[in-house]
Length: 455
Image (tube, rainbow, N blue to C red; front, side, top):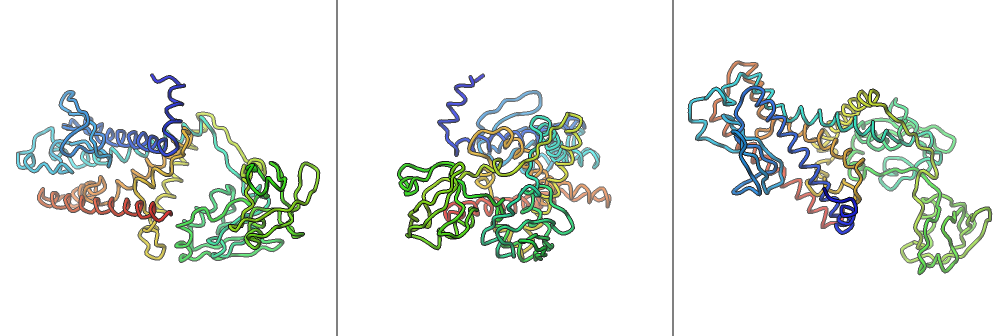
């Protein structure tokens, strides 16, 4: 076992990008092994021979392998997933020679359709059960924290994307459709996934309604962080070499006005700074209980050279909920269902040309980026649970080569009583593999384009 001090030093040496990569591969390994274990387990239950059990693919050679009983276990070098080779099944191995021989009792093709269906669904079932278990564990171990929308007392801070759909800085979003908002952080996703819909907003002292059209999704989907809680402009740090330091600005200072005009929130101050690039402004600040006016030089980029205090817990009261194990079980199941529904809605957007969501499809780089640059078990398990749900949904797609493609043909057989020929299944499998390869190339190509374009 690696000593704690050594593990910490290794993480420091790896840096944020290395830690992201490590978390990505650990999560991927867990998901691949357990997904394939689902197929393996049901195959064993129904006395079906499993010839290989591999984490990652192994074209031409394996990094590691050994044989135990009738099954070869190994680790491949191509991290695009994993597989179990089940005897008598037309899969990615395309073992045509075996299929020419008469069916044997231990082969997949010799089993009743209902047993084959469970073997095919085994990985997806395990993925969903894994999400249940992880979410239950997270709620039991950490509970849950959220920012009640009613506690966001200063309203929202939005960017050009939010303004394009009719929002303004300082708005308080009260309802999305007929649903009152409880968790502020869920507002962007709810707007995105439920459009067309109407937002009920409090602006100054008026209640107004803002219609969100389906065409607005194309604007929102590329910028899911178009709103944030509006917070005061409070200085966290002042670099020694900055103009702000020379002017005497200190940590904890709060700007409340510029050139005699009220400006106490980040968006207000930034707007005025952009209007005064390269000029000297008179900033009114609150320091402890004193009100001072200091001259500040604005850079040509519209900045004064300070780091802001973005700790939301200093401005708003968050709500924390603890769960006993008995409470965490139904809560974890409900969370899995909610996340699955949300992902299905997101997935549906990809096939709508109007939303242009297909442009946001990403591959391994996009997935790796969602992991934090520091090792955080809470985030790691949350992301792994989500990826487990994502893997279940994607594998259920009726594309030959995926579990869903095999399920589709098996259900056809169960309904009609007619089994597709081995030749048809071989051709369908090959077509499916080509489609999947193109999708992988497209998704990862999007990642590369975004990487070089800086998006």
